[in-house]
Length: 437
Image 1 (tube, rainbow, N blue to C red):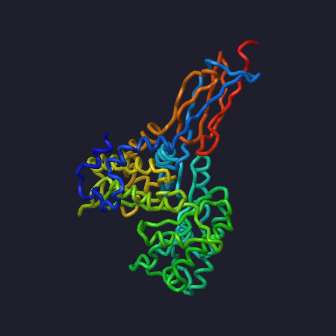
Image 2 (cartoon, helix red, strand yellow):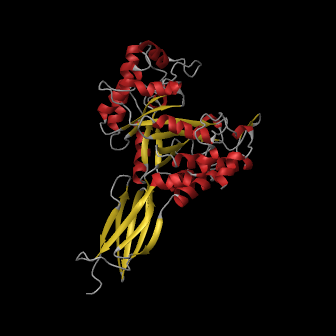
């Protein structure tokens, strides 16, 4: 019942709910109390192992071990700091990343990716993506089009038509170049409000958007990305979770009227305070109506208050961060529309806004939030079952994902790999040698 108590605790203002509850359909207590039941319903299935001899006869009493090796659900983070200053720090960062996560967001911000015209820095992202692939970590590129200063190279032409041409060519080149290595893309970032003012947005990309229009410059990159990789998973991504974002999604369709996106991306930076349980649920319900998976693409909860002396992690803040991580992830993992959660950033070192937002401290030691999430992802929400066959079968409830299934009988051992997917096959057969030779 710890989760229910969280909803009732009074927390410091810097970690209290940043937004009022916007949904009265379910209370926080109801949402949290029923989370485990929803998780069982939408994240697990009965997995049956059938053991037979070479003649196809069921084998009783065979020892079966069902060991999960990967989640189907995507637990991720940006991996921008993959290259650390020393080999020792590289090992710390990467080992702890791999131990917890199976999904990584790679940086494709135009300004840093192509600092000189015609000289895109492909090598860095390719190295990260190949490391991820070697370690069975799914990759995503972020972002292809954004009118923030990070998405606007200093050398960009003042001619809006030339800006569009260069941007479109960049999308086609990158998506096509990384096909098979990176097949998930945040295509357009923050299109719901592209005309924000301020030095970070007063640039040539924004001026181009003003001239050509919000939706035309959102729609066309999706068409280009789809042509470059027909099998890619394409996201629209935004920090807005209000009707302005819904309007963009409703209009993001092709000439045939079908959606150009595969997934809706939702940012959830909570530097100013954690979302209420009701708000988390309401956002999921609001965007689930579009009938595609939801990815929470940028999630932040800080582990210390901002002060005049700086913004550093504190022991109290770390415990509160761990509690909020468990609450936030539990609510999202229990909602059937959610397919991925990406944290932002992995470590406090070089974190966005200088915030103590990481799972790791600046010295790369794990915070309680890291350990808490690990206990969920590789503990409570992880399947490792053993037993003996009866009637040649063993059935266990298992989380969707990848498995190694080992059968042992009279000194013989056989291991097979199996993927348990929603709507897929839930029965795996294992044939072993006859007991009598």
